[in-house]
Structures are given as structure tokens and as C-alpha cells.
Image (cartoon, rainbow over all chains, first blue to last red; front, side, top):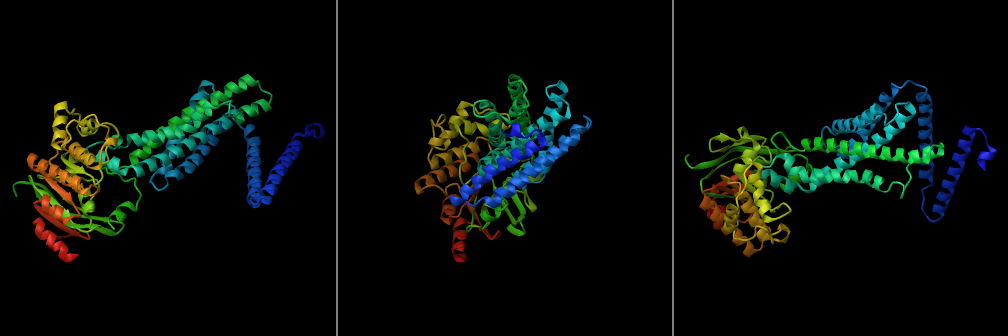
Length: 269
Length: 230
């Protein structure tokens, strides 16, 4: 109906956004009637989300007119931001940002570079940056999960780890089961995404290609390609991240130093 | 002095500005059990952890025979100075897998007859294939003890090895400890909060309070001193 009334695409977009926002506000009002007060938060979130995504759109207007070589710089900035976000999962441990930067940088960066070189991802700015950002975002999530899970596994198995050390085991052997658990846990989301692809959800990239009247078959195959790349980069990222953090878990004298700081003093109380 | 296997030399550990082990020195002889007693929070476990470098002393050192322990690779030190924790912390799997773990770390394979001898030594003959999840507390602690012995250590560190056991199981473990230490000529440092246990098992005792050595003497004199301090 709106398509028939409004022919200017920018105006059409604004009206569509207003209609969608009105529907969301109607739900907020309904929730308020049921005693759930989220009106303030919902309005702020919608305004913020709209502002952020329009800003990204404006940046893309500039980027799409820019040269191809600008993409690596944009992706490098995204990798740095992703490393900063996921390192918060292990912020109590020294070098968490650097570890995350190496992990996401190598994990996502290598996959993007290799696939762009092979032509699996088009090097055009409007393809490389959106697909690259999806790979980086998922690598960030996998790295954060791996660091968080590894830390919690180690902190809850201090006795087992120190028993292994006390029997002459290397730190690598002592933490191996907990490293494996962290890797398994961090790969569950990308694996589940692949497993449920097309049945439980139609991802945004495919939806976007369909909305742009691309071939549904090509859109579905390309969606699979992107999710497979996400799995590859997530696997590589969390392998590197958890391996690096596991090395930081021990002192040069192979003493476990990744433990809650209060533990030793509380034992001596 | 001849017969000294292990010598702690002015060991101190400070954490967050608080001294939890304060200038502790002692010697342990071949075939001897030295009990470390004291109230909760005295620094007994912290002291034990310094001896095999699970924690690093802020100052002081440990001599194993005539070798400063910082000159030994940590894995070799820990193989030679075995430790049994307060809780057994067995690895998931069979009893045999646990006993084979230590020797495998330095490329050795424990033969079946060696495994049987170790289990017989702790009164658990025929337990090779038992899953560790099916063991009682006393059995698990004895497996933990056999697992440490499988590494053929020269020194054994025992951190309240019977504290979570009932009286009967505790006496069994004590008997296994005393038999193995004296039979194999090990030097042993055993932390216990129970002065009576020190009298039963040890030949000397060290009384620790607030990280400081109050005295080193025969276990019965230390027990009396401890009573006087409490």
C-alpha cells in the first residue's frame, strides 16, 4: 500500500520506519498496561538504534564511492573494536586486549583475506565490508565466549590443574581438558546456526539478497558460504585466543596464576 | 648434615601486603615424617605449596639434597617432590589411568606389575579398572597417594590427607602413609591440624602460627605447646 502511495525511496523508507516504530510503541503501551514499564528504555533504544544504523548508512554512501583499498582499513578498525569488546570477558587478566586482537585479527582477518583472494568474497566495497563485518562480529563473539569459558573452567578446576602440575605435568597438559571445553562451547553458536539454517531462520544476508530481487537459489548458497566462513573464522579465532590465554594462565615457573585473587588470602584467614 | 633430603631456607610469602609464611626454615631427613601443625590460617598449606613451587616464595629458597630448587626445571622438581592434596582430585577414568599419569609425563610407562604393587601398597589390590567415580573418600585418597608414589618421589608433601575422612578411613590412610614413607625411605612433610595425628604418625613436628615457626620438636612436646598457646 505504501509503495503505491509513495514513489520516492528515501521518503518511503522514512514512512516505513515510522510505521514500524509506531507498532513497537503500541506494544510498549500494551506492556505498560500490563505493569511492565519499558517505555523510556524502548524509546531511547529505538532512537539510538535508528541513529546508529542511519549513520552507518551515511558512511556507506561515502565508502561505496571510495576506492577498493579503503576496505582493509575499515575492516582493521572493526577488528580492533571487536578485540576491545571481547577482551572484556577476560579483563582481569593481563594482555587480554592483545590476545583478542591477535585472535580476531588472525582468525577473521586471515579468512577474509584468503576468501577475498580466491574470489569467494567479492572485493567490491559493498560486498567486502558487510560480509567481513559479519565474519568479524562472529569471531568476536566466539573469542569472548572462549575466553570467558576458559577462565571459568580454570577457576572451577584449580585443584585438578594443580594436581596435574604436582605430578610433573606441563601447563599445556594440565589445562587441556578445560581448553577443549572452552573451544567446544564457543563453537556451539556457529554450529547451531549452520544446523538450523533455512529451517529455524533465514539470515539477514539472504533476506537482503531476496529483497534486492537476487536469485533465491544463489542467495541461499551464498548464505551457506558466509556461515561456513563464520564457522571457520570463529574456530580459528577461539583456538588462537584460548591458546594464548592458556599460556598467560601460568607463570614462567609453571605456577597457575589464573585464579581469583582473593583465594590465597581467604585460605590463610 | 648427612641424611638431609630437603631443607627450607627462610621461606617467606607475602600476598597483597600480608605475610602468610614468615621466614620459615626446617630440614627433613631420609625416612622421616615431619608434621606441620597449627591452627586454621596459620599458613600450613601455603608453606607446603612453596616447597614444590606451586607458589613462588617472596624470599628464601628450598634445597633438595644440595641443589637449590630454582635450578631444577619445575616439572622435575614436582616429580621428585610429590604432593597429595587435601582432596584427592582424581582425573576422570580408571584408577590405572590415574596411576599412569605421572610417569607418562616424563615418558615412562608404568608396567602392570608395578601398578599392582602400588595398589597393593595402599590396600587396593584389584582396583586397576575401577572407575574413580565409584570410589569412597578413603579409597580415592589412597589412590591419590599411590598416584604420587608412582612418580618415585624423594619427598612427599601431604596436605591434611585425612581431613575429609571418617576415623576408620583416616587410620587406614595414616597406616599407608607411615608404611610407604618408612618402607621407601622418603622424606615427608605432612600438614595436619590435629596434634594427635602428628603424635601417631610423625617423628618431629613443626608448630606454625600466623606464618611463623613457634617451635620444632617431638610431636608430643609440640602438642603440649600447641595446647598451651590455644
